[in-house]
Length: 265
Image: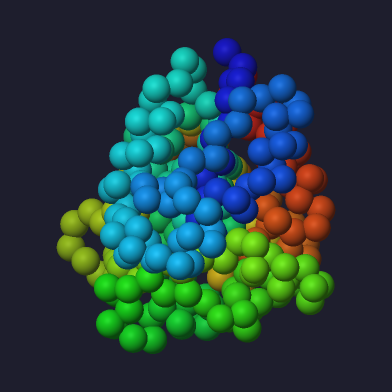
């Protein structure tokens, strides 16, 4: 049964506002489009920058629970499209049996993906440089944002994106993700790579993404071992991390939708 709903899941350092162009684009094609906020993130960017308390308090289990309640309450499984940390949440939802197909754009890695490129270390340094940040909401100054999110954007567009989309991120979640591969047991970003019931999953990687480089997407995809699942990777040249807001985003939005419709029908 053809999905009629698309759920867009945002990442860290941004809010659902980062999907604003995609929402209108998909609605114009006749889809119901939902771009949920993390618990406590339902306010505007400006309000989150003024009061970061919701960012400090949010946890991955809270985020997953809210997404599962939303997706599970729909009449039929939707297409799930996640960006950055939203790509992890998309993978977790698929692993838990939600969604008709999933697309993870410049996804953060799930547990067990141990590749750590130097560019990623540099991009996340503002959070990981100080263990005390684990209990804080950590923002990026413009230069770090430029390197991590918009390094191939024209200067004016990079600065405009920073002013429109940037919010601090949870230091607690970042530190938990960084330590996931050395903790015993399952962490919050765990998925079952052998789950043969998981719906199709496409990774979309940006060639010049410094925060979540293509090698992370390829490694993440290779971890999936179930023989009857579909897992694919496509890389776009010249793209930064913030692909949903980068010039030419329409091509990626249409590619993601076409792939998901093809593999969910």
